[in-house]
Image (cartoon, rainbow, N blue to C red):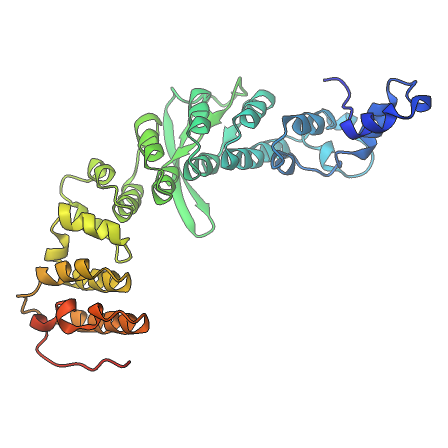
Length: 340
């Protein structure tokens, strides 16, 4: 790479012909101005410039013997194996989150024989960057080899990675990718269902029961019943993965496609309150009608009814503020008080 000449330096020197006689002067001034010798590759990647990455790379020492006096990060990026690997993984996560395909290509062109962490895959998946995921799969040197599962702990979150088993002396060419169900679950949670489906269909990771349940719960909560049904164990139904904090639109889908609201009176009571909270009178009445002849203990219904009435009072929702509208008259055998 030729010496870097900053545009601002070139602009200033253009009007100083007396100092531009030396062809290296502009490059020397540019080198003096930056980048900082303590600018990490991860931080440089956040600017989205491959020219800046080139600059940091070329300013870094290539061996222990060539390190400059004093301490700086540029002394270690290319000469210290552990820091070299660490910065590759950190920069990858920045690039994957941003969806910067050109930056990703730069990283794969300058680093060899290393592991792409599953966290990078997850960041690309949860932010909807399918081209990044496709590039990682196409350039995964471990794609055709045997994989083994390894547990990973990040904060309070635990998950399993599918790790390619490479020969002990493997140092490249290229890099290998760790795949996992964590990326699929997060894609579903962020409603990138097409990416979740692509990961399921194309990557080598095999879901364990914990991962499958997490993805199923996320899919049902988000209303993606098609994806949920494709993952269901033979002995289980969609209704077993419902969440008490589902979106109203998803509750309406549940009423059309499953009988979970009819079978589970406690869950139906919670959904009745959620619908009342949203001011959805039609859905409130439809849910209540499912249980109008039930003779079960009605504590759950009574409590949720009180919550719904209280919320309706706060927003002045008169239609919702009737016992008949909430459909609880036939469900309750005892009166209740509502505090306004």
